Length: 169
Image 1: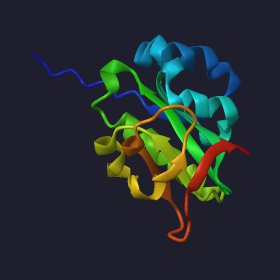
Image 2 (image 1 turned 180 degrees about the vertical axis):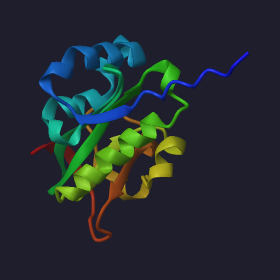
Image 3 (image 1 turned 180 degrees about the horizontal axis):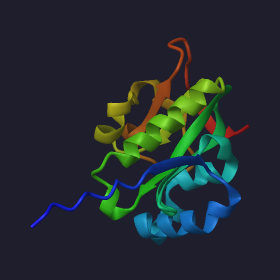
């Protein structure tokens, strides 16, 4: 029996979000979060924020959407930052590091365009791996009820302070 050569692994491609990705993204978000995603305080932030597609990324493999991260321009008090979320990855890809890759790319993009930092509501154990902390975000007031311990920020300048209501720019 002769050994068969292994086929090359499909290439993962990260692209900035484009309008033609919308249907696939919405389907992925529905699978990942269900209809309950629309009642979260993060959704209230997205309703008042400016979507930043150039800071939002989709992960594709062989033309199939495997993950997405979106970012939105907001202010916390007078400080302009971006709000990260939602982050979603197909179930079969969740332990492969794809979510982390998307978070890192989104944060790099925000820093590259001069944003002061990235704000989010999320799992503390997950997002602290990428430098997010609760302390810098303790003064951020989100619309609607939220567990303040899950509000975190990654600031690109140590002198940046986040205090006040989160609102659109």
